[in-house]
Image: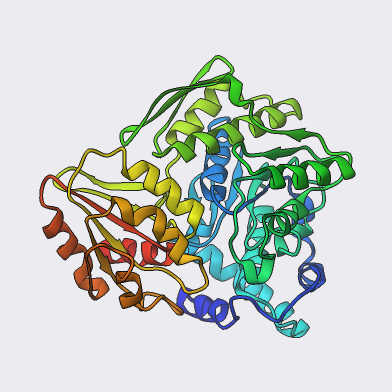
Amino acid sequence: MNIYEAMNYINSFSKLGAPITTTDRFRRIMDAIGNPQDRLKFIHVAGTNGKGSTVRMLASALSCAGYKTGEFTSPYIKVYNDRIRINGRNISDDELCQIVESIMPMISELDEGCSQFEITTAIAFVYYAAMKCDVVVLETGLGGLLDCTNIIKQPLASVITSISLDHTKILGDTIEQVARHKAGIIKPGCPVVLACGQKKETINVVHGTAAGVSSEFHTPDIDKLKIEKCDYTGNKFRYKGRAYVTSMIGKHQIDNALTAIETAEILRKSGFYALTYSTVYDGIKSSVVPSRCQILHADKPFVVIDGAHNPDGMRALADFVRTVPKEPRIMVCGMMEDKDWQTALGFMTRYIDYGICIDGFAPKTVFAPKLAELFRDAQVMSIKDAVPRAMALAGESGMVIIAGSLYLASAFQKMMG
């Protein structure tokens, strides 16, 4: 089997698979494969925004401490292999093909109507077990309670990042309903870390769920945070008297770092003694996730790309954009129909001088002329022509923002190589 055959097989499954009300379908799949996940230790991460950055910070810190660390994230930005990593290295094409070939007969025999994400998770579990990872930092796909990653038994910690309304048709249209899905990853007796800055409803749901299964509840102590710098060059802060730096920009990355710091402390106390302040510092500082408020060019013009796709993500991006002393501000925008794109763009357009709106970069994108209506001044253009036009409009003194969807970010990253 070659990589094209492997990817054709994976892509032959639908994104969501047949409807589910339990995780039993994936349990049967993993039973057939031999339950490699039962031989692994996990940190399980759920949330609406900040999952990928928090996962990267934790995985990097553990790698810096000398542990063989698996890192499972979604979606991919450049290549499918991005989603399955060990110590910062993607699974190779050969490794991916070998695993796909080995599990195909078992998947076909079950005929369960699997989703692409279930197949990907199965591949990851087989890979991490075969490579004898010391620990895996595991990001959920959608929600938590019914997510296939939730078949793991006793994580070292359950981590819940920022929660807001997203995927409302599946997770519910209130914060409490969404929070209950995310809190579904909490297991009896396993410590829980909740990111700071949450709504009261979220805190109540997560804290209540943890208390109901005798799980220790942790959240960063904001009174012990002192921000020394937070601008387009990066972040510096002190937490509990210790200095930290994030290379990833935006105030939200400080929040993600605090979540990683609190989780690392739990891990150290549970036996990961090499996870010292120094390794956590190095892991957070070295962490970079493509298309998460990523600066592509620092000047002439300033160019940033972000997968912000929902109101909270776009609000965080807007908070960053207004700190950058560059004008004019040109936004290349494309969004998905299943997101609250009107509310999300409402946070950004007040800071934008001109919008360039695109569609067609993925299934079910918002019709570009509809997006254009939300900007003070805008035009519709093909994805191929959008960035050159934006660069020309921004000139040497301006700023280009490429944002609205991780699919959009992925499309541009591929175009740029």
